[in-house]
Length: 483
Figure (cartoon, rainbow, N blue to C red):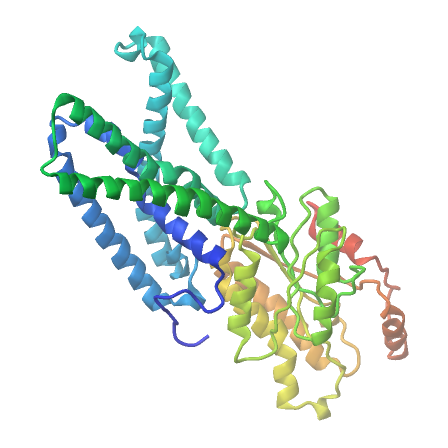
C-alpha cells in the first residue's frame, strides 16, 4: 500500500454527489444552533451567552480540525476508516472508544432533552404539569424521552446507509436549524426593534446585516435544502443501484464471499451457493462479494449480480504481492459502503495441478500459498476495521485433500493443512469473533465427472463420496445450528 497519501483536495475522479455528501457530513457536526435558545433561556444572565458561544466555537474548531487533520495526515486516503480511529491497534481503539462513548451518550441526552422539552411544552403549555411536580407530568416526560431514544435506536439500526442519512438530515433539517431560521429570526427582531424605536448604529451597518441575513437564507435554501437534498437522494439511489445497499433492515445479514474458482452464472460454486442458500433461509437477499483475479471471472460479474438469488459480485486480485493489500482494502471498502460486515466466508484459491515433488519449484510453492495463505492473512489483518465485533462467525474453508492426499498432491495438501492452522490462529487474533474452518467436501458442478474419474484412476479408496449442489451443501454445513 505504501506511505499514507493525503490531499486537501477531493480525490481524482470524485463525483459532485460524493463531494456534496462529504461536505454535508462535516456540516452536520458543526450545526447545532437549534439548541441555543434552550441554553440561553436557562442561563442566570443570558447576556453572558456570546462569551460562552465564542469560547465553545473556538474550542470546537481547534479540537475538531487538529485531531481530524492529524489522523488524516498519518492515516492517508488508502487506510482511512469510519470512524477514523478504527484503523488503530486494538488497545488504542478500545481507549478511543472509552473516551467517545460518554460523549455520544451526553450528546444524545442533550438532543433528546431538547426534543422532549419541545414536545412536552406543546402538550402541557397551559397546564399545571408544566410548572408543578405531578405524577402525570413526570410520567409523560419519562415516556416522551423513552420514545425519542427508541426511535433514534430504530433509525440507526434499520437505515443501511448511515453517511447518506446524515447528509440527508443535514440537507433537510440543518438548512433550517443552521441558516434559514436565523435569517428569518433576525428580520423579525429587526421589525420588533423598529416598532420599539430601537435602531442600529447606522444605515450602512443595517444594510450590511440585511444582506448578510438574506445570504444566510439563500445559502440554506439553495445549497442545503435544494442541492444538498438532491445530492443525498442521488447518493442513496446510487448505493442501491451498485448493490452496496440491498434494502431497509438487511444491513446485518450482508456477507463477504470469495469463490473457489470460476463461478458460473448458475451459482454452482461455493460463494454464490452460500449466498443463494442464505437467501432461502430468509436472512436477506445477501450481498456476496467474489474476489478473483482471472479475467474470465469479470464476464460473470454482471450475470451473478443480476441473478434472482440476489447475489452480487466484485473481482479482487489476490495473486500479486505488490497489490494484494491495496486490493483487499478496496474490496472491504466496497463491501462496507452501507455498514460493517457480520459474516465473512473465505474460499479463495488458485486452481493448482498435481505436481510431483521432483518437479516442484520455489515459484510453484509461492504461487500455491499466495491466494490461500497470504490472501487469508491479509484479509484477517484488515478485517477488524470492517467487521462488527461479536461472536458471529467468520469462516475459512479447507479441503479434504489434507486428510487423504492423492499421488503428487503434497503441495496441495500442505496448502489445505495450513488453512486449518491459520484458522486456529485467526480465532485467537480476531477474538471475540468466532472463526471456523469448514471442510465442504465435494461440490457437484459440470467438471465433477472428470475430477472423479481422475481420482478413481489414481486409486482413491474408502466409502464412495456423496455430492450435493453448492447451495444445498453450503446450507447444510454453514448455516444450520448444528454446524
